[in-house]
Length: 467
Figure 1 (cartoon, rainbow, N blue to C red):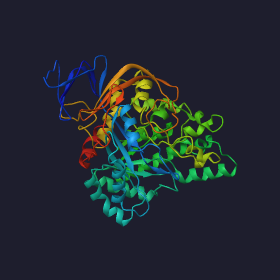
Figure 2: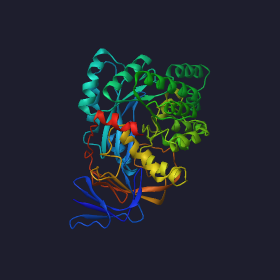
Figure 3: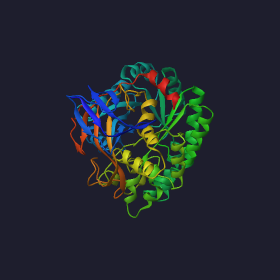
Figure 4: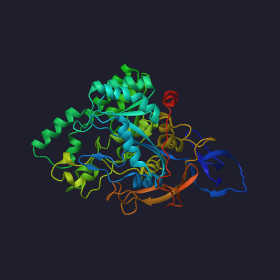
């Protein structure tokens, strides 16, 4: 059915203007004043922002890790994302051992099938580059429409790649026109620090942060930057947390390197003291890289404002406190790493950013949607409000106030790191390709209606250069 959104203030990464939007067959077909169509449903957006749907470039749904599995699968995770204003996610397809890359991708398709309420795509993790995987990679990326590969410099026992593998990944990606995403921490040194802390009898959650110092994130970021530069490849640094890493990214970009950076809501708003709470409460705040001392937040906000960091990912990786986080009750190194952020990413950035004057509404849209669309090859199909783009639209009330709580969130976890926080700004209705997923703050979507989006490799080469 045709729809016309009327009375709202349309906000993109470049403009804010009052206009009506006509939607037909899942696309935006007209933007203008006083639009009419006899057969169209009218959506009243008076007093609201009309925003492009959020793109979350960093999620882990139904992901095995630390001898357990994340609590949010593609059903609860994408419903929660939709409530939070996100209409497209890019999830990490993990590979294991000698398993064929195509087998891993097929597993992730099966995880999402019949469950996803919003559109989605994949990043492909690379742990080792055997002759077989090297031969398979180009055809697989082209066939599956995957424009991004992920390499870990941490988690030595699970995912960590060698520098040689990282460098080879950069060279292959450069030839294909893909971008390499890197988790930048020095995993080998971290493992040594963890063992030292355990031998000394430390078991409290705070030692998760104390054994992963910011200097090791900065060192790994520098190393990844230089390897990418030598290979002539594009680098995307995931979940940047600290001044040390920000400084390396800024220095590289000033030299003209193709380096892009992402940070996440907790690093902008929470700090290391959360892990030092009495008892085992700090386990709720264990993820990697860890939370940093509060002064790092200013550097992250400044880097976002200066466009030295481009995107906000949720790094959704949810483990309930009872039963899962408690696996590390007597050993901080066994606490599953990750937190639940997919639902509140949008509101936290608006409330702490736009409402408090740190960033403009244009910058908000860019960070929450447009830049990710460009970097990963979704633009202009997604990430903007323009004629011909998918009608992925959020009707957003900038004056609404709500209190975050595990009692009311839609994620399948028993706690929320922002418990009790009052935020300003809330998605009211959310459309994916012109169809309601959230209507007046109620889920009305259809599980399995989310589409897998193939991204042409050439779009990354063309668009990422403009950021």
